[in-house]
Image 1: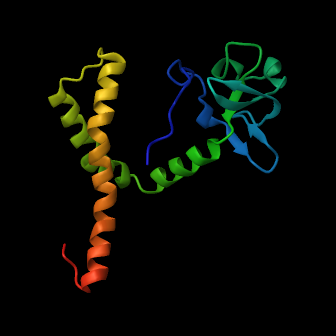
Image 2 (image 1 turned 90 degrees about the vertical axis):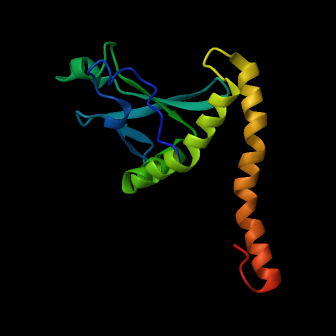
Image 3 (image 1 turned 90 degrees about the horizontal axis):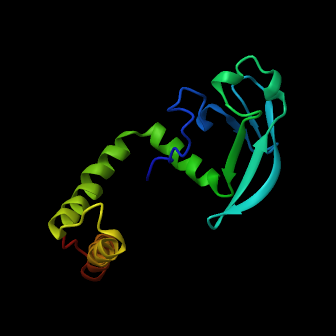
Length: 161
């Protein structure tokens, strides 16, 4: 599980972030902090992702507009598969210890391997490819070990682990 990424600077600049808008799936609209409905307007493809755009014209007369947008209206973008991200975020909110567990079991070993390989943030695609090739067997091992253990248990009737 990974947390949902924050892609807007609005929150950092003191304005409402996308998470302050509530999506109503049955009506395909967003509800803004002022209670206005941001309706669907069009679908576009950006960087290989299909995204939907929502906005309302009520922003121009809104009393809290300065806390929301610097433009004439606030636009919200929704990825076609964003419901998956929302499900993962809801699970993380319900069980924050899962992220701690992930950091302890997954991120630390991979960070150590990258550091020992001499990977830097400046290495570009060569470092990224080398890391992926190094990490692939580790990932496969982590996935296949439980399966192997189940097969060994099934064959012998007793657990070997």
